[in-house]
Every structure is written in structure tokens, then in C-alpha cells.
Image (tube, rainbow, N blue to C red; front, side, top):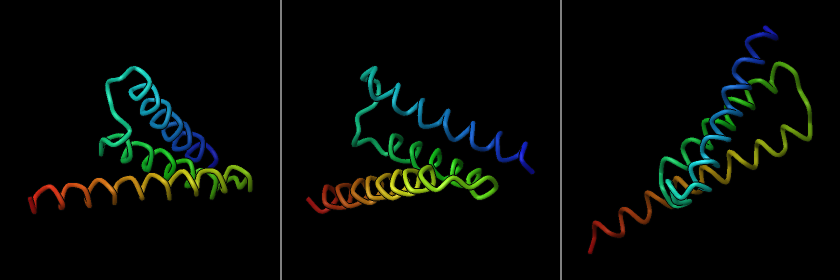
Length: 86
């Protein structure tokens, strides 16, 4: 089970690093849906790994990372629905 946690956690970290690299290389904007989704998936994967091997500070930061990413996704849908009304 620990191997699974390490693999899923590493995939989550890779997703977050990828999203940040895309943002810093100006290939993605922070308001892009892909940025928030990739961050949410990454944080979710890391939280799964933390359920196997808990670490409270990491659980706290990844929970907030996931929450903020979900807020970004909601904002994207809200902005999109407002544009469709115009």
C-alpha cells in the first residue's frame, strides 16, 4: 500500500509542477480551466497519498491547494456563464 501512496503522490506532485511550469512559461494563464483542474487533480492525488502516510502540515497545505483550485474552477464556470448571457 505504501508503494501505491508513493506513486499516486508523485503523480500529484508532477501535475502541480507541470501546471506551475506552464504558468511561468506563459503557455497557460492562471484563469485557464486547465490550470485549476491540473492543480486540483495534483492536490487530490497528494491527499490520497497522505491518507496512507499522514503528515499534518502537508494535509493542511494540500487541502487548501485543492480548495483554492476548486474555487478557480467555479470562477471559470461562473465567468463562462456570464459571457454566454451577453
